[in-house]
Length: 547
Ligand code: AMP
Ligand code: MG
Image (cartoon, rainbow, N blue to C red; front, side, top):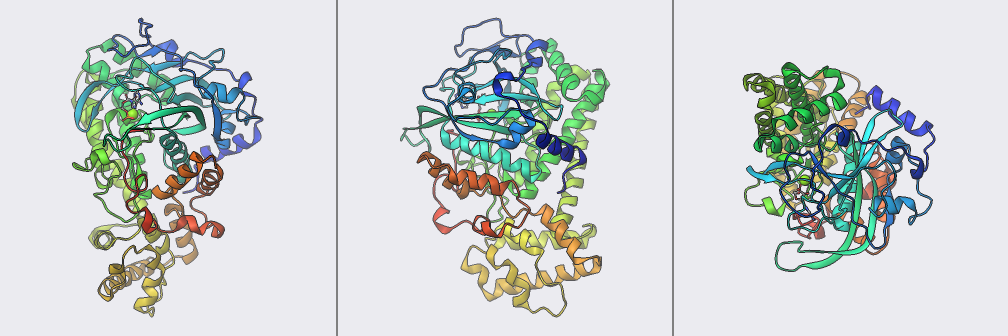
């Protein structure tokens, strides 16, 4: 996917501008200035009313140390690379020092969890430090995750473990380079403190190293920020938050009015649809699509027990907490996003005064999703435009084949560009490029191979009917079918190494994932299917929310 002109300009700016030391960065606080703060200053878990956030400072940690720094994000923000892993950056992004100009806060929000209204949730361990105007001219919020207790921590500790922090840090960056709308991450800081977690909720709690991610996005406002005001009947706050988000983050929509609220909601529907279609394209499963984990900007947000499809399986979810109902499995994601948008629409009714316009606006979701997904499928399959019943059958039959015999989705699509297109190719020549995608012996049985070959014959005939230059087709496919994704076991290997003090694995992986669509022959080992040892290993196939 070639970057949009705007992204290209931003990338050029990132390289040209000279970053300044963190101590000289100017911080702004537009959300704090625009919305009312919790009048109670007591940092103890409680129900907060009549406020959009609570002012709270991070809780200092014993020995903050920068474990990873995302150079490109630093460049975009205009913040210079730390000179030492133990310097001011470690102090600030570990939560030990609040710089002049920062007004740290935890946001108040609610949400539907697994389909049920859960009431107040809020930033239980995330604390926003402030906002920075980046070198690209955009506003970015800097937020620490794992920075200690807040009034929204309920019974939890406000901390995060290294494994989950590494996972958020790496995946949000990997998603960015894949071209998926996402929050980003600047730093990963080790706290030098242990955090107690019962990783599989089986009564075996154990100490683990703690860490803090500084994540970055124009705003971390979620659907749930609006839902809590609607649920607790605070219409004035609802309006003030909507007006803030529209004027600051959707300035093109014009001055807020009932009509603008509707058009704004329609735009959220469109953006959400694009993001979900992108997830489906790259095989990403979020794992916890609660409404408090849905960004008001349509970004991928809150990386928890997410995972990547290895064998193509629509029913797969990485989240052990969801193993039974599979509400948030890969194949359900498009409908769940729609369900979540309905909840947001319900919260916005008081602004519009009538639910009909919002219902109407909601159709933008399905329209955008269908259009985007069809476009992406055309690119993935290397067909000029997938249209008509016969094309639909061709595509559906492919997915059925992938599902029937465990086949790696990423490798399959990447290899599809290499299938010989000449009519004379025999069965084994046709299937050969796909063999690396097969997980089991079943896939190599003559029966499956001949089914696959039969499909490939239909497929190559369809591709030939398009005509066009073969090289251009391959290039287009390679821009839609990543070679490198953050396979679940690769993330776990990076975590294992970092827990032993070795940052080389995460460093290498991050570098490779910056160019996911390029062939990098020296890194072919990172594009292989999941090894068998990782099939059922904790962290490689199943994850809990205990992060
Ligand atoms: P999540 O499932 O990570 O989206 O979190 C749901 C809610 O639980 C949010 O309000 C989080 O801030 C809160 N939460 C999750 N983990 C912790 C923790 N360790 N300490 C405090 N609050 C947490
Ligand atoms: Mg969350």
